[in-house]
Length: 450
Image (tube, rainbow, N blue to C red):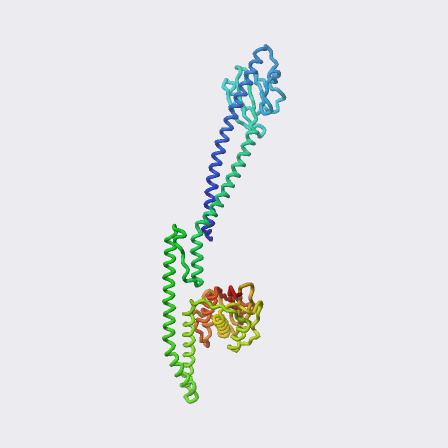
């Protein structure tokens, strides 16, 4: 299973922490408030019950044969309290008994019969109720049944409020985590942007250690790594340039000798003539390789952009390679701001690649949309396998279809030069599958409108 990203984990951590803290505080607060309200409500009910019990005791004591119902009706119990009297085994109430006596637990009755005042919370008809028992004499017990439904409703509202507060706190924690992750990851984002700039060819790009003092070690190490990488690339570039320059002189001598042999080929015997032809072909291939290496060694120079008639340039490249100009199509403005030499070599290399490995180019499309230009070259060959696509633009890499052909003399640098010229314009090159078979090489060049 794919692991969540750092930003997601930070946000989730903040949200979970805030939720746990707020839930704990809400639970503790609820328990404290609930206990406090219940205790206060119970004390109030007990005081009222004792007050009413005193009134009943006084009313019963003044008469030899008292009217118990009348005495109970003198009580002001309001809507929430119900008063009943158990006298000599009989039950008396202010009004018709609607299950009030059934709500009085047997255990509470037994304790009251033994002369012990008692209080107990029960549920009567599904509602929370508080029952207070006050013994008046050995044969008389006064009970008051007090409804706690209003208190339960208050606790329900409190629960909803505390739950909403907990959820809001969790959301606030997630928002804080999002902000914190952005703040924490901002330096790393700058490092990633710097790495992308350097990968795109901006080898002089560096990070400022003073921007984030806490990450000074990372930025210093990153800058040191870039310095070492730039120095290594510069050494490689100089080595390739020096070797190429050193090889050109002996190659020119060999080419001159090979041309002499080629001119006198009809005077040689068959085996010698064949050997002379092979030498001449390999020298030409070697010269092309040296020229490509020299071009790669100059890859760090910036593109010199000037207005270029792209359809005319593409047709000229096709004519130079004896390819029909009818395959060139253009959309949008014909004038692009590009480096004519680089783009010309880019197009030429793509046409050469199509001729060598793709059965020849069948379409060259030019399109300028907005400020970006796009070049597409289609061939009708076997295409490029998925395994080769990530590597085909590297130096000295040849795809499987190229390796399977013994009659090709490619250097493995043509597509690397295409990628280098595209990068010099700040662009990219990709290879796609052509609908109907074959390969489609696509070059995107930003900033083509001057």
